[in-house]
Figure 1 (spheres, rainbow, N blue to C red):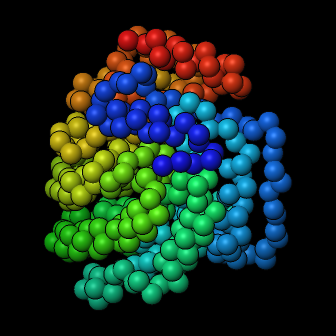
Figure 2 (figure 1 turned 180 degrees about the horizontal axis):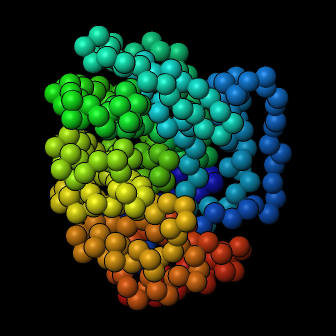
Length: 356
C-alpha cells in the first residue's frame, strides 16, 4: 500500500501495529505535522448560510485535498482526510434536527415522550444527511486515491446518541424514571449502529484503505473510538448499569479500539473501563484549564499498568518526565507542542528511539 504524501507508510504502519500490541519495533510512534516548504493555493468560496457551506461536499473534498498538500507528515503522522459532518451526525440520521454553525454542529432532541417517539427515532438510510456523508466519503476517496488515507466520519452511539435523541439533562432524569425505556433504546440503537459502521467500513476496505477516523490511528480491521461524554453527569453505579454493557459490546465488535475519556468528571469510570479485556488503549482528554502531563501522570501510569495503550499530547518540556514515568511500549505521541522544523523533529525522534 502506497500513499504519495506518506512515502514511508509501511514502516509507520508497522509501528502502529506494534503500538496496538504494546510492543516496540524501533521506537514508539510519534506524529509530527510540519508546514510544507512549497504550498499550493487552497480554493475559497462564499456562502449565504453555514448549512450551504457544510453540504457543498465536492468543494469541501477538494479543499481538504489541497490543504493536505501543504503539510509534511513527519515521523508517524499520517495524511488522513475524513468526512466531518459534526459530532452528532449519527443522531441526525435517526431523526434529530441538525443545525450547522461556523465550526461545529448541534442536534435538536427528537424524543419528547418515550411511548410515542422512541420507535420513530431510528436510522433512516434515505436521510439526506446520510447520503451526503456517503457522497463525501466517496469524493474524498477519489481525491485520495494513491495520495492519502480516507477515514470514517465521527460517529457517537450509546449514551451520547441517547443524550442527543432525548437531551442530556432529561436523559439523566430518565435513568431514574424510565430505566427500562432507556435500556431498550440503547440495545436497539446499538444493533443499528453496527450496521451503519459497516456501511462506511466496507466502502473504505473496498478501496483498500486502512481504517481510521478523527483519532488518526490505523488498523486493517474494524477500528474506532468508543466514548460516552454523557458519563460525566452520572455515578459509576449508573454508568455500569446502563452504559458499560454497550461499551463492552462495542469493544468486542471492533478489532482495535481507543476509548475517548473526556474531562475530570469522567475519570471516576476509568477503573471500570480498564477492566474491559477487548479495550486496547485510552485517549485521556483533561479539558481546558487542566493541562499538564505532571498533573495526570498517575492516570497515565494506571492505564499503562492495566496493559492498555496511551495517547499522549504533551510539550517538548514534558518529554523528559514521560521518559522517567512511563515505559515506551504502547505509547503514541499524537502531538508534541514545540516542534517547529525538521531539525528539532529529528532530535525528538532520536530521543524517543533511545528511550528504553
